[in-house]
Length: 303
Image 1 (spheres, rainbow, N blue to C red):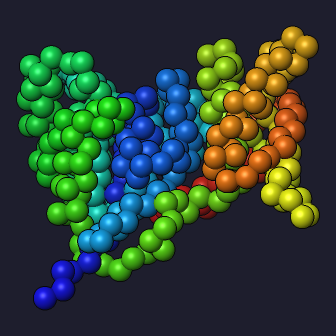
Image 2: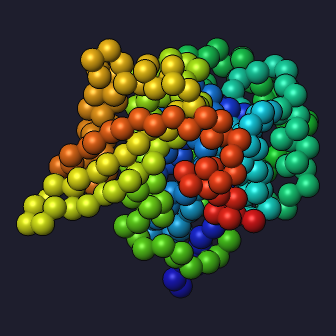
């Protein structure tokens, strides 16, 4: 008798900087979501797809849940919350801790009202004393009825195979939503913009990255060549930030472009010529019109 194929959607949620993007990239074996040690790196719902002979799992990486103070922040929190009632499984990611913080309490209170199976995933266990992990489990396990409790290291890959096995058990019978060789449904332009923003996150001062967006002006393949020409603009909020992004003698923007080009070429599978510009759009994070222009549209969120 042929084994029943399974499929479903899995949302990864948690506070900012707990390793959600790292986990999603590890689960599908490819770098799709950008990563940084700065909080609030992810701004969109990013979808990736893992297909095996037995199941297809569609993972949704969400922005870190935080207390927003801009319209962009409100968009990000909404992006995280809107997946909760539309998925089959929720991976609630935390770090080892012996006290449930305010934001985690708020997340748990929302999780108690969903119908999805909720897994508690304790991340970043690499290098931790096993007793710390046990204490974290004891701290959280009575806060709600978790379907599974799994300690993992998204960075090292520890217990990720066990997590995938658990996910496969909870997925319902269903069709393949996407082709077998597809690992994301994100548009190429969006992925390119995010890779440029990732390099800016790594290279710029800690305060500036939260105030930047990337706008892809054009992306064209050359005639009779594999070369792709990309023009992109880094949007920032202040004239002083523009100077820092450009850098002395243009060194900073050149460095951002050099680092981004490597990853973009791997993504597209072809050589690229990347032209980067910088524009100031004051207070763009509080402008619904500009937020929509830069891809932060509420219409794109799962409802």
